[in-house]
Length: 129
Image 1 (cartoon, rainbow, N blue to C red):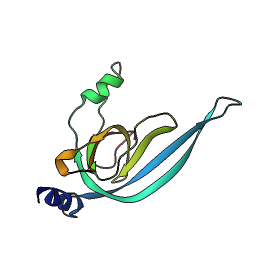
Image 2 (image 1 turned 180 degrees about the horizontal axis):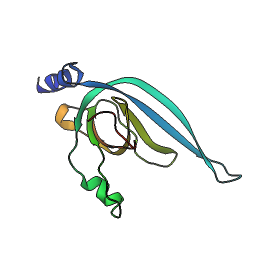
Image 3 (image 1 turned 60 degrees about the vertical axis):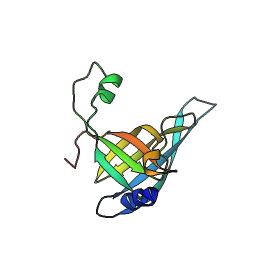
């Protein structure tokens, strides 16, 4: 019963949000070593999107830089792709901003098949606060 309630929360339009996912398949040319990407967009994915307060994620990657960026957390039924061989990390387009997937892991608190992803903004200036 609890799992059904959790699924209802993720799909409830009052709590959840819709976003687009851009899956980027990467191929490296054996002739010149240059990489190229092929993008496939999945529109209107439903999930719970929340602002993520862990700025350490950014500081770990770029300790020499001083800047602020938006980091979001997404809980949804679709597994978002991080950087692996053959793929660049997925891009999430939410409220006009572009976020790159940093981490994605199973999220059994909502039931089987749910994932939680942490994504950081890659836009110079974010449209949403």
